[in-house]
Length: 366
Image (cartoon, rainbow, N blue to C red; front, side, top):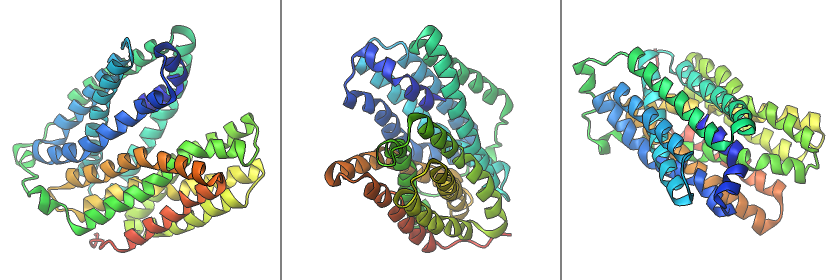
């Protein structure tokens, strides 16, 4: 909800605070840069002191930072408060994935997919709520509203999530260096390449549809609306399949066909209907990122390092969020060819992603 609200309200924020394009873009960048740094720390902390403490700390920082950013009188103060929100963002997600792993140890694919679905629902609700409040009371009230919703969630988590036992809380004593296994490093790199496909396509696909494919604004809105549902649909489909057939197999079955689908979509398709169908297939196939990577990393790690594994994977996901849109923008500027750029930032990384997954040793599962 926070990211969607910031995106919807960005024109009003720029107008109020007199921000340049670079300053406006940095509001997103600071969130993901801080989240990338905080994620491996929070994952490790959740192994050492328990999921609940880290999760509650994360959602508290997230909602407090975002609410205060809505009261900021200028750009520097808003950047500071969004950095606090980014800290909460980085604390929240890895500990949540780790908690779901604890709750569903035999069905981690389903657990991770539920997190992804909730993330997508929050994005949709954030867009609807923010646009409605901005129209009536301005962007600052939208920020405060999302902050209050976050406080309610914090209270629910404090009451509903059970404290772990002392024995469980003493987990995670394995030195961090030993927790970083070969498989975890490979999965972190795989997440960077897979995540870069998500972030570059999320950033530039709408522009490509309107500019290179010459779709109207309404046609682009329809296609992108359908495409926006694919992470949830793909996660619900691929997560349970991976519980049955194995993470590695399902990721490979989806990654390489996804690379082909991306090439076909961007290079060959032109009509709105064909593009909608093609992007729906492409988006569904790439939904293994980060859902199945997190689950595979947790199973590849030692039994007391599920949080550490989640933190490493999500850190690389946020690094990709910062890097991938900038790389795509540079390629578009240097080549002048949007179609070639989208192929280079979607099909090629998915092939590398599949190759890295193929090199991972998957532990036998019951």
